[in-house]
Image 1 (tube, helix red, strand yellow):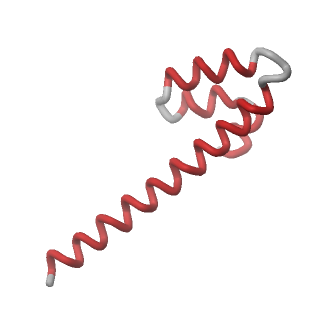
Image 2 (tube, helix red, strand yellow):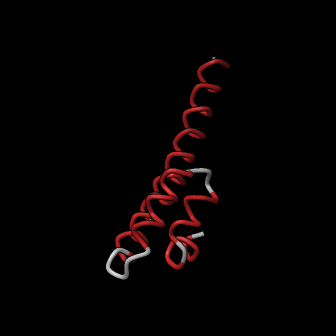
Image 3 (tube, one colour):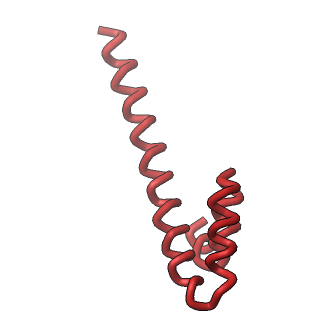
Amino acid sequence: MILIAILFPSLSFFLRGKIFSALLCLILQLTLIGWLPAALWAVVSRSNAVRDEKLREMEKRILANQKTR
């Protein structure tokens, strides 16, 4: 997914269901100068999404452990 975020930043957002961000990113990447910021934005956004998912899983496990006590 990181490779897609670098090569096709707007597609990375679209595949994750972030339509508005995908359109904004597409407008940004249509300029040659905007391609690098768009790719960085897509990679950072993807990394944050993975981190947030891991944190939610950890919170669920903590809450499950508290309920069993």
